[in-house]
Image 1: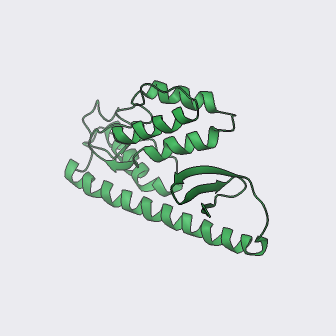
Image 2 (image 1 turned 90 degrees about the horizontal axis):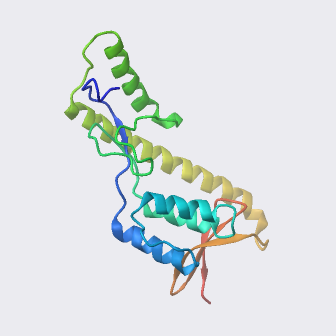
Image 3 (image 1 turned 180 degrees about the vertical axis):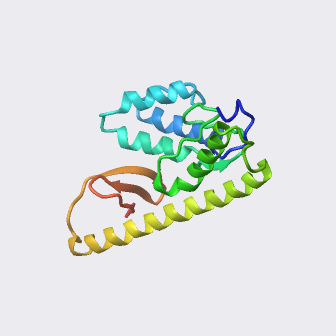
Length: 190
């Protein structure tokens, strides 16, 4: 609607992933015995997600794909949303995204009232950068709070056994993520 009315607005952009990242993901899933010939195809990636849903490999595959994607950002430019295959995505659902949501609502309201929407692409580009930085800061603060709370909770549980999924492999060991708690760590090869 906003595009049809030539109104500038903040889009939730999610750029296409780097081809080499998708190739690395394809190599990873092939190592698990999962066929993936065209890693740049959204349809192929969706098929892999469907096929692994409910399997022991689900977490590692879904997490691996997520890590191969770029982070989303706010911009007035029509960059598209890779994961949703949409050019005009601007639907915000998180409480930390309320200001971009408000900006979009204001633009729609202006059009409905017969007024010219406010702001230029340049002004919205600056606003989009600020909203992206604010979102990243909020996400980092949330991760840090969760980490502190989990460490406080787990300090009395040293020596207990938990289920984990391997999320990375290096020459010196494997990186695992616990199933019961969102905690990652290194199990050294020694």
